[in-house]
Image (cartoon, rainbow, N blue to C red; front, side, top):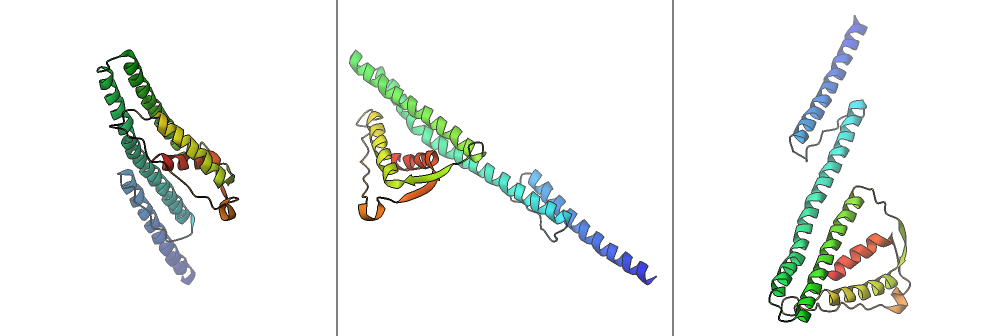
Length: 207
């Protein structure tokens, strides 16, 4: 009778704990399914149910992070697209006012430049999505920062010059200058993915 009572008591305690954990996990999954992306399950044990609750929390955090990144990306892309679209609209309007074939050709080239910028923004979006979905793995390598900056500043200067259309509405941006301390920074290296680092630094310089 004593053994049976102890077994019954232990079983009741374990069953109650298990039911509580399953109830907590069920409640979290229901809230998450209804759109509460911050819903997480309380992990109160290290058994199979506790491990399952931990895995659910990890999955929920990843999904919330992905959706948050997508929202931020859409907002950023919408903001970036406004400028070239406005310039294209302005360029098309100015083409109708061109007084010569040379002026009209110049307006057309300005519109082509803005279309290329739009194409570049779309490519940026696709690359970012591939990074975010881990389909484009990073390949870290040692990069000499001095060479990276010098190369990109030259490219940014050429890009800024070629994208200039109307001086009254699109003034030439101020140049960006760097000071390299040859004694301290000449051999400074960075461990990073070359393509991703160049893309990030180019975005900073272009803005």
